[in-house]
Amino acid sequence: MYSLGLVSLLFWNCGTETAPEAETEVGEASVAEEFVANPQPVTEREVGTLEIGASAPDFRLAGTDGQFYSLEDFAEAEVLVLVFTANHCPTAQAYEERIKQFASDYGAKGVQLVAISPNSPLGLLYEELGYSDLNDDFVDMQIRHRDAEYNFPYLYDGDDHAASLQYGPVATPHVFVFDEDRKLRYTGRLDKTEKPGTANAEDLRQAVDALLAGREVEEPTTKTFGCSTKWAWKTAYRDKVEEEWRAKPVALEMIDVEGVKELMRNEDSDKLRLINVWATWCGPCVLEYPDFMVLQRMYGARDFEFISISADKPGQHDKALAFLEKIHSPVRNYQFDGEDIYELVEAVDPDWNAALPYTILLAPDGEVVWRHQSEVDFLALKRAIVDHEMMGRYY
Image 1 (tube, helix red, strand yellow):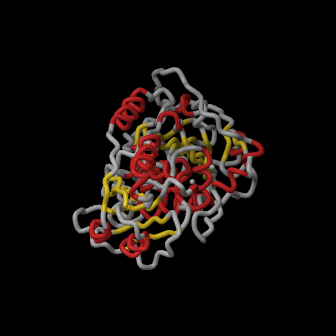
Image 2 (cartoon, rainbow, N blue to C red):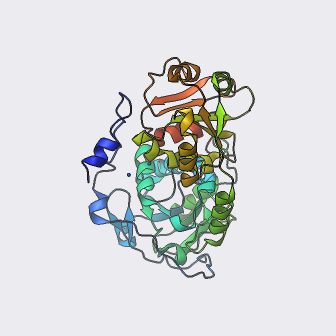
Image 3 (cartoon, rainbow, N blue to C red):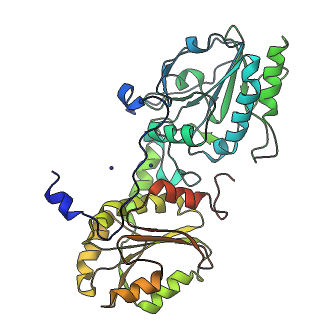
């Protein structure tokens, strides 16, 4: 992590389950009442990284806690650390706990850490989200701040890069350390080892320790490895990827009970297999189906595949195919060829109560990783996928 009357009747629950309510309260203040994100096209330009000795450019950015922040809000800090980071980036996620630990260790020493997301949602592809449950928009930043329990402000700069264009982060994460006069004294990496547990932000700590002790930073500039900044003008590749996706063919094959059982055993692949059983007459099925395409695009380049099974009657093949073509579902699509729907139910999962939609995630040996009757909570499903041992959030 979408008038009434006739539409409500049409899409009233296909089964007996009710969908989990979406969580809407995030943080202590209602950011939606004060700030609504509005990513804008930005003209392409050369972006240089702020040079050592330069003054910190001011900004006014919305935080995920419902407040707006500028440099003045951190005036009491002896040292100010700005970390440009991102929800989706594997490298940034690998450093999350180190950033939190740094903020905890140095908060009482007069050091203020502030995280800024520089990325524009306009410049980010579904295919770049394969290591995350979230994208880089403002709402998902609120979710990450809340669920990861960030102990520092997390600011959004995805509308027009107002701050990021002045600081020039080349990747996420990218650190900028300013002294009491807000002169840049260090810029670069947190440390040189991405894998969690192998380092503890030594480069950042050494720079800050030097400033607190009144010394010069020995190595004021380091290279920073990570995900490239997603500037708003980076759309050409997005268009190409979208064209390639739309060019993939959509087909619908018939499948019998034995074929369904074989799918459920998942012995013919080395991937997590997500299966959704749906029907054209099931309102919730139709409404949520496009989100499964998003999952395929997010995780399809990794050890993951999505398969659909239509529970429409065999005589409704053309109708089911027309829906899949309209949605554009270029995955393995099947339609059950039997007249006894309960044979399909038992073949998919004996614990399924037969209500549609039904979704199940299987490991390569057929082990059930996650299952859900009724509409899916896609945030929970994304986490079940990306946090599985076959996947993971970083390299």
